[in-house]
Amino acid sequence: MLARGPGFSNGHPPRPRRGRPRGLRDSYRGLLQQQEPPSARPCTEFDKAYFHAYSHIGVHEEMIKDHVRTGTYKAAIMQYQNLIEGKVYAVDASEIALQANEIVKDNNLSDKVIVMLGRVEDVNIEENVDVIISEWMGYMLLYETMLPSIIFARDKWLKPGGLILPSHATLYMAPVTHTARYSESIDFWRDVYGIKMSAMLPLAKQSAFEEPCIETITGENILTWPLVQVMEVDCYTIIVQELESVTAKYRFSSMLNAPLHGFAFWFDVEFNGPAISPSNNHLQFPSGSLSSDQHSQSSSQSKKRVKSDETIVLSTAPEDAPTHWQQTLLYLYEPIELKQDQIIEGSVTLTQSKENARFLNIHLEYSSGGRSFIKESVMR
Image (cartoon, rainbow, N blue to C red; front, top):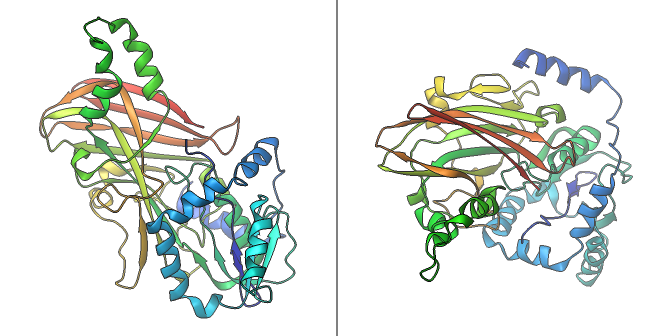
């Protein structure tokens, strides 16, 4: 959604799937600001299928009924309503925009809201805007690769000092134990109504845990605190190239004697005003590089971004109210029995898929008790 002339608001459709070092980054950002407006990447057949999926009413129903999500966005819009009200471009690349336009008419808002059907990269807006509002976050924050569209809109239309909602995002990870889930999917096959079916175990593990799982867990499943921040995003300054691959190192100490079944990922987003200086770090890693060595930076594991009392935050953490994003679980094929204070360390790399840029490749390395492992997975 683009608040116009004073403003702007972008709306890529909701989720269809339910069922260099700092100096170089800042220099590159400066070069971008001197160039012509950004060019749109081609719309692929994958993109067309992706947008078509958002034409289904069920997707939008699920999103709207997510009271945490919708209520937080409402609170943020009300906080900045003086910048938004009476001046909105509503941009959607799926044909649900046709129904959105009828809703605008039925509520006598046609003089305030202009609905535009098309990719934000392709629509024609003949003025700069004050505000960009979008719900771009996918599972594991980056899945579906919607943030580049927000970056495009920002660089092409947002006025200096303009507002982006949400403004910041942080992706977290933590080791988890989940005996009930493992038993339900795997141990079931050891004895099925008195019949030994252990021959099914390899296939069961592959079927259940080959791809990331979208599930709801609780704080009791978390094996250690504090967490690790995989990445932080500043929507005012991040550039597209920084989203192509993200690597973070981690080091955890188990609080319990319990099996390590995998790792959980979740995110939160903040709704803040623009940064004072455009040269602030955009994709912020505690070590100041694209490959974050977080186990050597204890403060990065123990602290979230400092938030004022007025900051509005949408959280998908296990200890907070559930959302449709739930948490993303990357299960291990073989659990590791941990002792209290046993160290788990390694790295995780998230990369845009070459097959389809909206897919997310996950490369996980983990070591504990003198053994090292690698797991690779694709979120499709």
